[in-house]
Length: 395
Image (cartoon, rainbow, N blue to C red):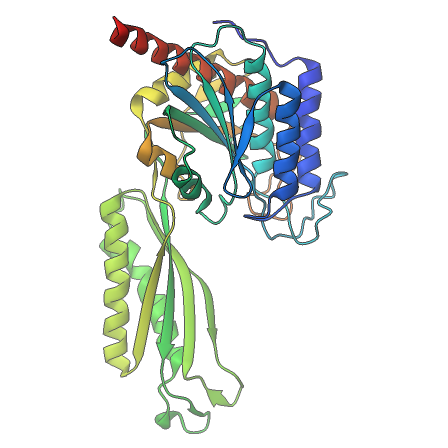
């Protein structure tokens, strides 16, 4: 089925929207202005919409009766980072920045909505999901619980990626993002004067041993062919230079691409904490907070995504270079429905490339029309497949 292409006027609208929300970023669960701006765009397109959760939105383009829905998802939230890009549309919300490309994701899905709204005879209904709080790893699950996937048969999403040139659409089967869990470790030792260390149970020493021991879980317990990460991001202890600390606190994340490895990392971390506590005659408490499971693409949906990407103007298909150990709560949708999560190359040509979550992160805006057309194409292709199945069942 032919679809309208992204003409210069629509491209300008996508860029304008991206720059507007980039200039006014909002943190997780606080995406109020962002949601209002999305709703205004949907109103212009004549697409009915409603809120799910306080700032989440779903919008539905109708299709034939009896055919399940194809869903497209974009995340909305920004990060607590002070922007240093020097762009003319730099964040005006000090300390908050779209440093992960969600401004681009929203623009792409809105662009797909604009293309599909002009397409006659949609083979299946299409739902546009604008999701808050991806950066906290909880927004997708909240949207699922609120009914975002009601009547949905399959779902598609994507992420801009500075590791690939603009025009590359990265499609892979199976696991494409790792799971992530946060851990908090509290060490309870005994304070003492710095001149009398024999009277102390030094929480700094215990914490340091804990940090170094954790590094051996991945390097000595996990098969190198199965990617995993244990990272300590915070270590706090002590109150004064002449006081041996009696308390220390560590926090970090564990990441894995397989459920069995994820569980092994958790067990090993707890085992080490218990052993070190026994060794140093102190108490060590460990708490885990579950975040996102791994993102696992359905093979059939990935095959459709490759076809859609290959047909997209200015795009070419490539495979994932290396396993991505970053987490993405799109995984909660894929636990409920088959789908595919892709990456859109977005290197800024001629400029130094900075990683996501950096204060200087930026994207090549030429990726916006590519993403918009891809999302429109995958919606039509998946919809045609669903419509064919519905006809077969009816007969």
